[in-house]
Amino acid sequence: MNIKQVILQAFRDQPGSFISGEELSQTCGCSRTAVWKHIEELRRDGYEVEAVRKSGYRLLVAPDRLSAAEIMAGLETNRIGQNVIAYDEVVSTQPLAHEAAAKGAVEGTIVLAELQTGGKGRLGRPWHSPKGTGIWMSLIIRPSIPLPKTPQMTLLTAVAVAKTIREETGLPVKIKWPNDIFIGDKKVCGILTELNAESDRVNYLVIGIGLNANSLESDFPSELAQIVTSLRIESGESLKRVTFIQRLCRIFEEEYDHYLRAGFERVKQEWENHSYTIGKWVTLQTISQQLEGRAVGLDEEGVLMVEDQAGQIHKVYSADVNY
Ligand code: BTN
Image (cartoon, rainbow, N blue to C red; front, side, top):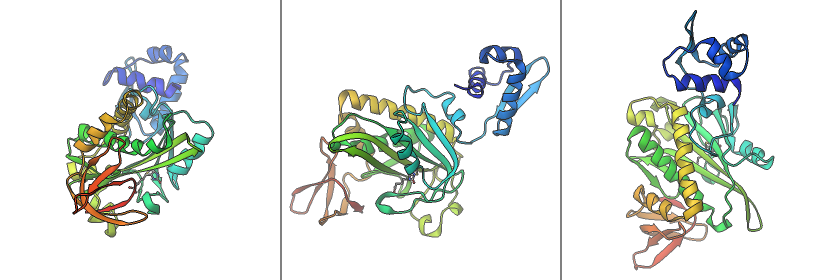
């Protein structure tokens, strides 16, 4: 932790209280003048810090800005989110995460931005990522699993996002196969998993998560307005994005650690419990065919099983789905 992070942590440990300059200088291992300089820097970063003679400093308001310091202060994980690379504006966080991973970024590294000018969705579609309203982040993981199991990481991520939304907002969230998070009939979050592998060895995965957090209806272009929503539109309250990311990191790590220890079964069950797809009549466009049938569940590897009118079960690895 750098000095700003230590100061923020001290404020968090004693919420609402004044902390003397002397105490902060001891905690940080620097002079009182250095503490004051770092407090000034925090103010420039958007923190409102009250300073009262003889009482010291206290934090009044933390900005809803996705900075590394904010996210890492109060993070309850061992790996996920322990390295945060935060930008104001990027084309897309995905290639930046690939670059960081190729240079050896540790597992759990998160690359995020307030604004993406060329956000990428699945199947080459654009991802609308306006400034300050969403969570646009790419997570690097390095699981030692065989290549065919990597789609399970997308299902695991969808479960982690769905659980985080439920815990943070209480909203009735559903997962549409394979990786869209829905509230009612509108999409609130999309996941884009990209893989780097050599022969059958996984080097790393970059999991892109795009969550419409605080967007208003007027923030969406007209072609999206009918099919997407945000947590703020649904709950009527603005979301603390930093708290959401911290909780997402914790839940992801719990799911991921359990998966690495015990396998896919728990993710499969949680995914099915949150599923928007199971039980629905679906039309699927795979690379080779169009298929219609009822989605009946995931198999033990996470492949979608669809029963057609003749009662035959088809296993679907990848497709565009319509309902
Ligand atoms: C989808 O099509 O549903 C997937 C959308 C994924 C969007 C996220 S936002 C963060 C990361 N950076 C990108 O450019 N895309 C992913």
